Image (cartoon, rainbow, N blue to C red; front, top):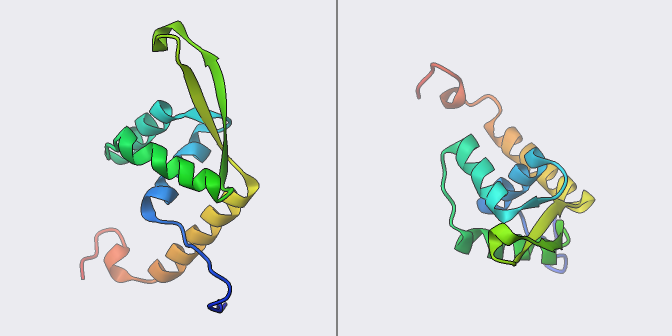
Length: 117
């Protein structure tokens, strides 16, 4: 597939992919701290809120997820949580990114378990 200069297409960045996958794993609406915990648990990677929230905002601006503000909670000092959910467009984008990565990785011996290049 070719893209012309008149049709800008922005591929998902690595952090965007990680966030979308974590949101999909959590299912339904999830908030930032739960997403951070899921990423840490699954990957061992700690991502700061300062990196997560601007990326979530960018994904929402692109229509790949949506957010809603929940009710205020006492445990958060009366502040409300913001919940995120992956849209159908976000699901299409993460599938496309996954297919692209899998196509590039297919057959590479260095990626096979127990083999080193």
